[in-house]
Amino acid sequence: MSSDQGLRRDGLKSARLSLDLSTADIVSIAILSALGGVLSTYVGYLANLVNDFVGTPFGAGQFLAGLHVFWLILTRCMTGKSGSGTLAGLLKGLVEMLSGSVHGAMVVLISVLEGFIVDVLMIGSRPDSTLRPLLAGGLATASNVFVFQVLFLSGVPVSFLLVIGLMAFASGVIFAGYFSHHVLASLLSSGLLRQGTTAARSASRWRIGLGYGLVVVFLGGALWFYATTYSWEGRGAFSVQGMVDNPFGYKESDFGQHIVTVEAELKGSYVHLEARNYTGVPLSAILERASPRASARSVRLVATDGYSVVLDLKLVMDNPEIIIVEDKSQYSLVADRLDGSQWIQGISRIELA
Image 1 (cartoon, rainbow, N blue to C red):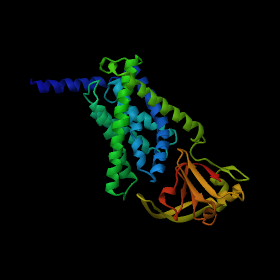
Image 2: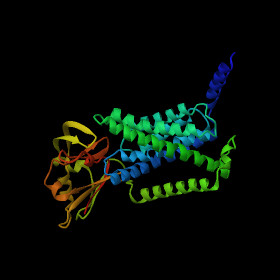
Image 3: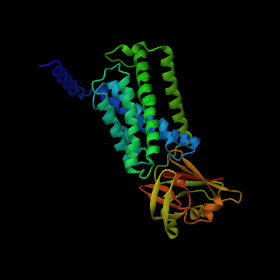
């Protein structure tokens, strides 16, 4: 038997053995997956801030997409077991979906695919490997761009897809691969985690400090987000508040006499949906029920993840074809005359100012 055959046999044997998860592995996968699923909503909020800063409805936020895959890379490196990345992706996706992701069940498919890519690219990697996590993080993160292209972004220019794909790849290299590698090194150096290798124990103090500092900033920002921005009312519910005399919680059943059907076409800078009929309640009827004050001038619609759009109050009141549509247990804005970026999904509250 040749040496190559022996290596292949040993490699297959180690791959089979690596599927045997210990109790500690299962606990690690569960904890990291749960954290990743919950914090993914916060990452989406950060991505929205980046999009707003750049001035695009989506795409620029891919700069932070690697933070979604960070948990999968860290799980795979901590357990050292093939299959742990895919399992972590499944659990993370389920937690994210149940936490109210606007993508619904599709987020589970995306997360599982990312975990599978991590597992495939990490097969046979050494515990102290640096290149494999970087490559796995980049490719796994970039995969979400092309999944969304197949499912949602038909008609988007190829050049734009390549740009945000490269941006996602870079994000995966930095935040999923590099960041997870140094977090693992910090855990090993501090003695909080013990593995069979000591290669990562020599990490310099400034790198350890930087790693812990980023974790503190990230988690601190998440706590602020969930305390001040995130809506805990759940999907399928939103409130009308602000400069109104009659704030209330919206229920479509209370507006049965106002329901209308309009034809609308989503015309975004990068996304286009053909004209079709939508059935819902005019936003003007909802605002009338709240009795806007004379000084109110604008309407701000805020999604569960913090994304928001601001509309002129007079424009809304004069255009009853701007409607609120219920779809898959969440409410969305549909408006033929408005740019596609203003078709906000997952509305959590409407504020008049």
